[in-house]
Image (tube, rainbow, N blue to C red; front, side, top):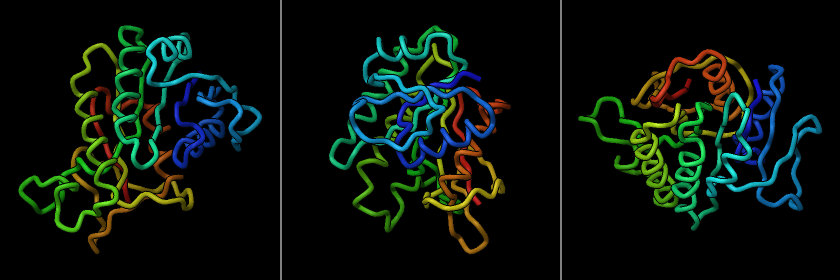
Length: 212
């Protein structure tokens, strides 16, 4: 497939790029500042653009099979996530190009509760609440989108660099936890889950989650 990736230089995005290349796909990585150092492989095509600008999105995704967004704003700039989501949806509206978005875990319901979402559960860290709430707004925008073929991937509660095992579980809107109550997945395995979905769509216009 011909894949355009927004947020390709980030923690998750770089692993998505690596996984896509390993599977033989053609990857175009979108960067806002071409002068900024990056560690993308030489086989990746670089393009300059901004997900917040619908015209950039339309230009950079024309003729592509898939768009992946793994953008994550810096602390204090969380509203940029919603702006980027609007730009992507407007730029892809009516084009037929599929979009897979890496979102957050905060909007997943906690097992064994009356439907409490993770961001509203006791002990949720205050320092990540702003991005969790922004991700919730992001998901709401996707669910309201009628002109884009979207999929939203929520990770487990703990998402960290790790190893690629290829072994994990999938769910829909409930947080996945292990027998000890832990919820985690490596960034490498999240990339595997994303590319599996890209190659074999099972969650069109829906959210799904991955965890151990």
